[in-house]
Amino acid sequence: MAAPFLKWVGGKRQLLGAITTRVPSEVGGTYWEPFVGGAALFFALEKQGRIQKAVLCDANPDLIETFRCVRDEPEALIRALRRHRNDEEHFYGVRALKPASLSPVQRAARFIFLNRCGYNGLYRVNSRGEFNVPFGRYVNPKICDQDNIRAASRALQIADLRHADFEDAAAAKRRDFVYFDPPYVPLTKTASFTAYVRQGFGPDDHARLRTLALRLKSRGVGFLLSNSSTAEVRALYSEGFTLETVDARRLINCQPSGRKSVPELLIQ
Image (tube, rainbow, N blue to C red; front, side, top):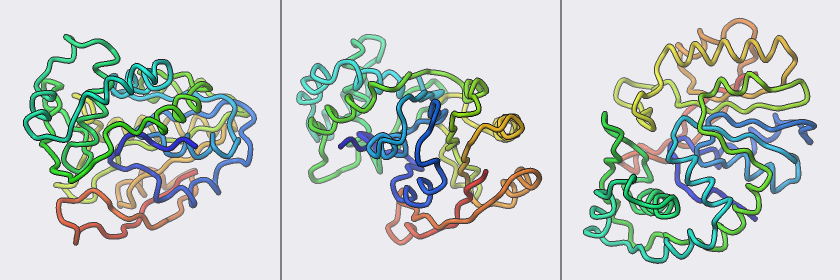
């Protein structure tokens, strides 16, 4: 059974129980996930046989390329991943490589390796779009989970993988279902993890997302949207939406004592 092959900030494994109960028992049309991230919900729904066709999108081109490689070339990817090791010097050497100099399979292996061995599983880029997360110092990270890569490849056969803005989901139809999991509005000024792409994801993008959600709702398209439980988010979705609060454990924090349950919103 497939599970996420990446660690991802805001990953939804911990909230799958709360989220899956708000998704139809069987999606009659296409399942859309415009902020695919680690794809925890996609893998859970596919495992349960609740979706037969999916469109998975993300604005991060490296992420989508990696998903395509897992789907289309799992064996070549496994061979490439076996060449990597959990060593600090090796990590920084791989991080310094120019992605354009590598083949698509090598880039995907680099992406997964840096994710598995980088600090707290973060994916962060600087203003030049260069990955800049430091070495994670894990004792024995699983760099090449070959069984899960093969399972993920099988699951992803039903998916159209797109490097695209979330507004691609405007094409969703009445029998489709859309799950929006955008970079969250930060709880504090220092808690923002939106540097997954060079341009980030700011207030104007959240306003665009709310507008799209309203359009889908007016057309009778089923959707679910998750975000942080802040006054800003509550105000943004105060009219025309149903808001529910659930507790999520914050897993990515520099201090274990900071990994506490925090309220999040599920919006429909």
